Image (tube, rainbow, N blue to C red):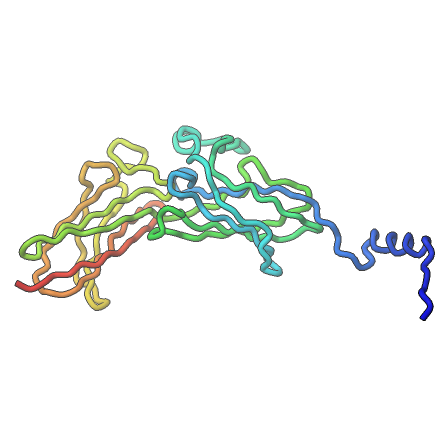
Length: 256
C-alpha cells in the first residue's frame, strides 16, 4: 500500500480548527479561592484543633476540583469579638486559618465549598457547605469564602465509685477551641450543660453539670443503683445562638 503524504498546509488547518474550539477541550484559567471556617459566635477554626478539611466541587457534575486542609491561627480576637467591623472591612490577617484552593476554569461555574472537622476532635466533627458562582480568573481571596460552623467541641467521661456514686464530666470549648471561663469572652453561665442518662434507648433522667471553676470543665453527680450498662450523653446548648454540641460515653454498674 502506498503511504499518503500530507502537505504542511493540512496540519496548519487542523491546528487552527482546534485553536478555535473545534474539537479540543478548552484550556482552563487558573483561579484562586480562599476557604475559611468560622465557629458560630467565636473565631476561625484552625491548627489548634487539628484544622478542617476543605473540598471544592462542581455543583453540576459533582467533580472534585480541589481539596486540602485549613490551617493557621484563630484570628485577631479584638477584631472578631470585641470591635464590630465596619462594612467592607477585612476581618482576617495573613496568618488566619484558611485553605487557598486553585482551580482551572474554562467558563463560569457554580461551585460547592464543603468543610468538615475539626480534624482533631472526631467526636464533635460537623460539616457545612455553601455554593457560589466563580468566574475564570476572578480570584476570591482576602477573607475569601467564610463558612460558619455551629456547635461545641465536647469530651465526656465518667467515674463510678462504691454504691453507684457516679461523677460525670464534660470538657467543652467553642468549635475553634476557644476557652470557656469566668470573666472570659465565653462565660460558662451563657451555656446550658447537662448529661442525659439512658438505658436501652430510653431516657432515665437529666443531670445538671455546673461549671467547676477550671477552664472548660463541667461536672455533675448522680447515683445509679441498678446494675447494668448505661449510656451518658453530655451536651452543651446556647439558647441565644442555637449552638449545640454533644458527646456520649458508656458506663457499667455491677452488682454487690
